[in-house]
Amino acid sequence: MTACVNWVVRSGPWPGLFAAGLAAALSACTTGPTPDQMARTTLETAPADLQLLCATEAARSASLEASKVLPVSSRKLDAKNYQVELNAAGKPTTCLIDADGKIVSIQPA
Image (cartoon, rainbow, N blue to C red):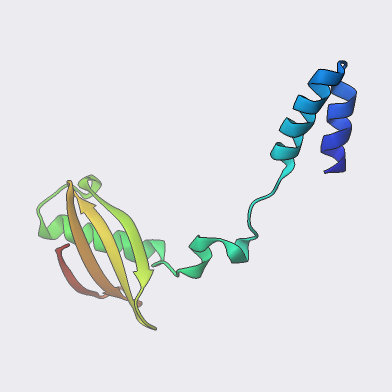
């Protein structure tokens, strides 16, 4: 933060600009929450390979191009199972997959 304040002091030749520059610099120097406080770290998502397996299988079962099915979100259900939410050509679809890559089910959401 000291580096930010020093930069503003040296860069603002007029007193009126100093206050505005200081406010801008201090707001730019603030930090967000630490990683352990971020919402994303509190929810375990499915590994990328399992999400892609779900998308591939959903595309195959719906006779769609693989590029038309995208994972939207995922979450860990228990020690071995994940739920992956997919967008299958605009239709919400849910895939349940285990940690070994076995598809448990694919169904419209």
